[in-house]
Length: 393
Image (cartoon, rainbow, N blue to C red; front, side, top):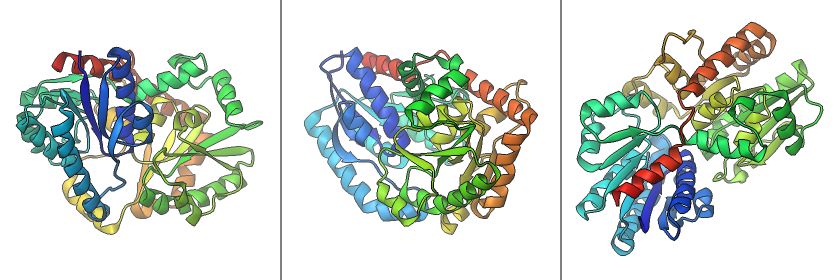
């Protein structure tokens, strides 16, 4: 039985996965000691934090956070010496975590990598480093299996931890996955969130990092104002990421009637009929919860320029990426993705109104999302990974 495990999560989505894993480890191995890098969720799950997570993304944003990351790296390496973990679990965040893997392997500490870096999109050569440094890889997207097995990396597809989180929330309502989208479940969740007499509910998610919110909140506000004219009965929910300082919202006033909730993205989406979402983990959440969406994203001009040079993907949303790699059941419909200058009220409203007013289009959208969710049904990533860690120490 493992007694000491270190978990390193570098940003909000990975931190959620780390918290779910910590809960599973505590349940499977009573008395286990956990330390690592994360945020509020991991602390609440029983992890003694060495340092907090990063809010950096992209070329210019990462430069600003470099000093803090360097200090965190030094703290973690020092903790390797005094805590002596039997296994170190690295969650995504490859630029930081692969360097840390090297330090851990040099000290004879087994390295478990949970959530693959996006080597299928860019910097494909990293798989050579992974093969050299990682004892076991647990990946959460089904199409990654072929990549790692062909490279000879010990690996396993474990499912997606978002499904574990969804299952926890559904249990709160005495519901299961087949209840998602039902009028009865929507009514329960809406009542809990204080939403009454709403014929239509839309979730808006401007991101989990300060610069994402600053870039996207102004246009989201404009869209809500336009929606209020066209659909007066619609209500709006904005789930605030747990690790995000709400002060970022002080720079931009939200329209009247937009409800802010802290860390309740799954409940917000369960209550919703459609969503406007910054590209990232939240868009996959919406897909798994059968919520048709418009995906938007804006970064600095420099970051966008560099991304166009080095990233080799047709889509930025995981829902679309999963559909593009799926079987003949795929109808070809994709969630609309709007990037950079295309993120404007006219473009967003055109797609939102189509989702709302075109019943055939909406039904096809929902069928596509059902197909995505089917890729992950019947798995519990957190419990599976906890068991794999137990076999490694």
